[in-house]
Image (cartoon, rainbow, N blue to C red; front, side, top):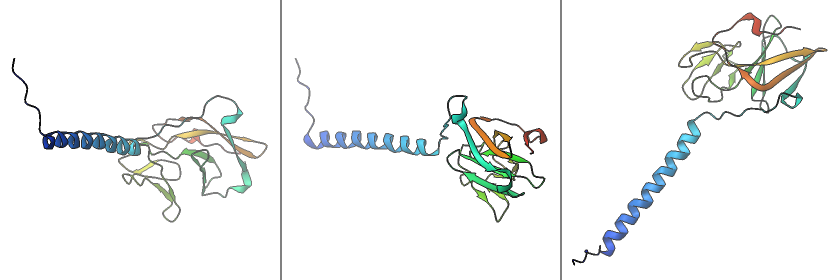
Amino acid sequence: MTEGVQPSRRSFLGRLWLLLGGVALVEAVWIVADFVSPHRRRATGGDDTAVIVAGPVERFEPGSVTAFPAGRFYLARLDDGGFLALNRECTHLGCTVPWVADEGRFVCPCHASSFDIRGEVLSPPAPRPLDVFQVRIENDIVKVDISRPIRRQSFSDSQVVRS
């Protein structure tokens, strides 16, 4: 019976460092992948817990965009007085798109997609407009149902709610 050659201490430590480096690399890839992947946070239930009361109609000036961080949406009041609740997630990779008031558009910080006040794509790579949430106006109070975003392929005037 032949005895196997026992690895030297240096060889053992080299392999151990290689193993630990591999584990660290896997963790780093996991963290980066989690950071760049879209986080799909959905409200649950169909009751009023998923409805955000945005405020009275007169609070929102025509041509304005108001951020609602808790609901993860923007409320856009169009120049004609209509309302759209736009999801803050870019339709390309799900990054949060800020409203750039000076430019009058949303600009994605990840890949520079841009959208107009109606959420329509101005510059790709975003493949389609920003998703919207259902808006209701009851007794001159604007309410937004954030239970689920409405995926859309294009803008339609029927998506705009007027008081």
